[in-house]
Every structure is written in C-alpha cells, then in structure tokens.
Image (cartoon, rainbow over all chains, first blue to last red):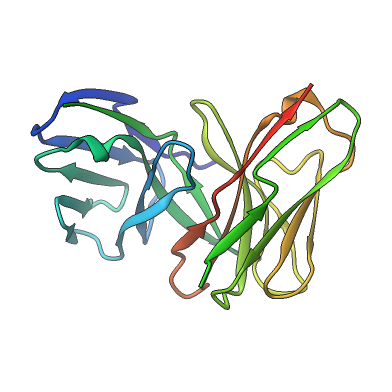
Length: 113
Length: 112
C-alpha cells in the first residue's frame, strides 16, 4: 500500500540550531500535513499544505509542498528545548468511505540545552 | 470546548478479556478515526467512520470492532484481547472538507 518515508528517523541537536526533515512517497498527494507529538500526548497539527510548491510558515516552523506532489519538507529555525517530540508527516487519501490519512513513521527530535 | 476526549487513559487486560475504548468529540465533526501507535511504527489506522451510521476498515482492523453511536461518539471494542494489541490507541476527528484531524490524548493499553 501507500507509504510515507520520513527522514531522518531521529535527530540530536543543540539548542539554537536549525532543523530540516522531509517526507517522501511514491504516490501523489493533494494535501500534506505535519503533526507534532509531545511525549505522552496525542499528535497536534502544525501546518497544512494544499498546493504544490506552497511554502507556509507557523512561527519558527516552515513547511513546503514539493513541486512533484510526492514530497514535503519541514524546517524548524533556532530550536528550543520544547521542540522535543516526534514530528509526523501525513497525507490524506480519498476513497469511497471518505478520507483515510496515512502517516509516516516520524522523526524524533532531541534538543540539548 | 474539550475537543476529543478518550477514556480510559490507562488499562491493563489479561489475554482473552474484552473491553471498550470510548471516544467523544464536541467539534461537530462528521468523521472519526481510531489509530494504534506502536514504537517506531507511526500511526496505523484501525477503523474510521466518515459519517454517523457508517464505518470502514483501515489498515489493521483484525481483532477490533467499532460502533459509531452518534455524531459525537465512536467506540473501539476488543472482544478477546491479545498481547499483540498492547499499544497506545488514539481517537481523532475531522471535518471532511479539510482533512485536518484532531487527536485525543490516547489510551495506553497493556495486554498480559
């Protein structure tokens, strides 16, 4: 079935560094979603992208919808300790029963103060 | 406005026992979902309900049943729990026109 491949699997960085992660698929998506999951919590939507080539920011976060519609990128600038967590990309697929969203395996971010 | 709520937060079952996980949302969303999250596996869809009165299988439905009780509530039932069902279970809801999902805090289930 369809898969979303996220990389890297984990990152260990120093506070203040910038972070880049990406998500790729062999399938085309019309929407890309980025979620963050804090330890012990449910995922929270960070950014939604609806158009190929779109670049969207949310504070220190910037995400891009790849021009081929098969990839997306998330950047975090000037990381802080509360950025720790798992970042998931997700893509909704429309079928007869409605939308089914598939998720990547996540990028685990560790920030050292 | 509580968003998506789940009960219980933690549960320990013995193999073969049954239980129902409850989920409710107060955002008037049409669509609701159940996922399981295992270490390193991301989120896998168990069942979903596009609207009240409909349910469909997701990626990993075996061993589970669901009930969309009304627009607000969507429950997940394990009829005969197995150790392989040890996981964290998340409920989510969405407006079908945006596909942006809102998640509950999760239920941490251990089957011994």
